[in-house]
Image 1 (tube, rainbow, N blue to C red):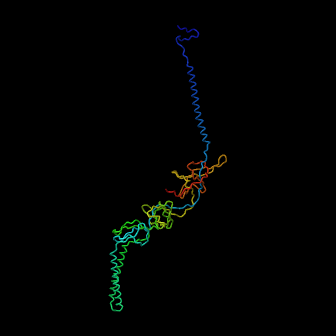
Image 2 (cartoon, rainbow, N blue to C red):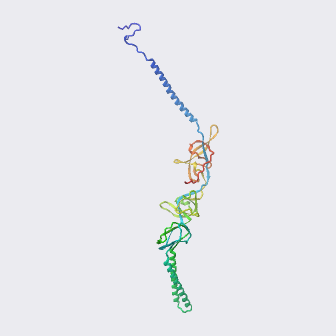
Image 3 (cartoon, one colour):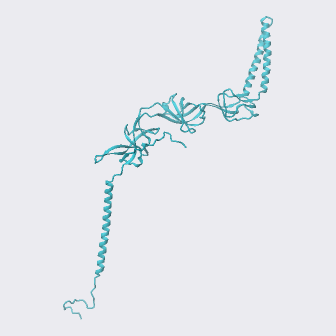
Amino acid sequence: MNIVTEHKISGKPITEKPHKRPVRMVRWLIIVGTLLALLVGGLVWFNYFRGKMIAQFFATMKPPPTSVNIAAAKSETIPNLLTAVGDLAAVHQVNVTSDVNGRITDILFTAGASVKQGTPLVQLFDGPEQADLANYKAQQRLAQLSLDRAKQLAERQVGPQATVDNAQAVFDQASAGIARTEAIISQKLVRAPFDGELGVRRVEVGQYLTAGTQIVSLTDLSMLYANFTVTEKDSGQLKVGQIVRIAVDAYPGRTFEGKITTIEPQIAADTRNIRVQATIQNPDRILKPGMFATTTVVLPDKPPVVTVPETAVDYTLYGDSVYLLSEKKEEDGKTSLIATRTFVQTGKRIEGRAEILKGLKEGDRVVAVGQLKLQSGAAVTISNDPVPQIPAKPPRY
């Protein structure tokens, strides 16, 4: 029986017990949540503060000026050169041969020797010709005696003129036989046709030599031809007598000088090139026919142009550029140097200098060494170190 009318007695059954709330668990969850919120908030605030300070640091930080070497653009007259490739050829070069057939009885030269014009080289067997020569000389002597007697008789009006004419004809026939035999004998002795250097011997004693067989090569090295070609566009700048400088791989760093002696009057229809020939003195005999040669024609000078050291130009796919120096006034009143990338139009590069056709004027200062460390607008200082010299022709190894 439940009594619901009594004071402080609820209407619930007496058998039900009241539930106790977990106070300690709730308190723990509140503490942990507060700590997590503080931790997350601290991290967020720290990241925000760090980013703000980093941005402020980079905004106010100025990198130290870069030390560079500088050079001034100069107005100068640069050599006007036309470069081409070609080869060397001998002015006089021949393969010595015999005009007639015969057996070699004597070789009168040494391979590789220097000979003069007319020096005997090879003797062929000429025994029959020598006998014919003796025969004709005997006939000539007899014909001379007969001719003299006939003339004496004719002068005394004892002998007819016909006898004189007949004796004269016999004498002339003997003289012609002598001349012919001597010519054949001279063909049996092969001589040097001009002064020069002999090559490798190609024959042996006792060998039967047919006409036209090579005996030895003979080359005159005192003077050579340099044959090269230039384009149709450049042909109008060439004239006979212009100086040509020759460089060969056998003697790096050395040049040989000659002059243009012949310009082909016709332009090749297939290549549109014109053939040019220069003559070069070779007193030391060090240049050889067949050498590959780089030829440089010295053309008349052009008007002065602006030039800078070749190291100052940055060659890229986007165009050629230099770092142009300018002065900038700071807030504190001081003046600093600023390097600004400036695109230029370049021309020829000669002896370590680059021709600037457009983009610079005389007196402009540019960075000569140290561009790799720069960006456009960067501050720079002038280095006291000397600018390294760049050779016009790199050394060969």
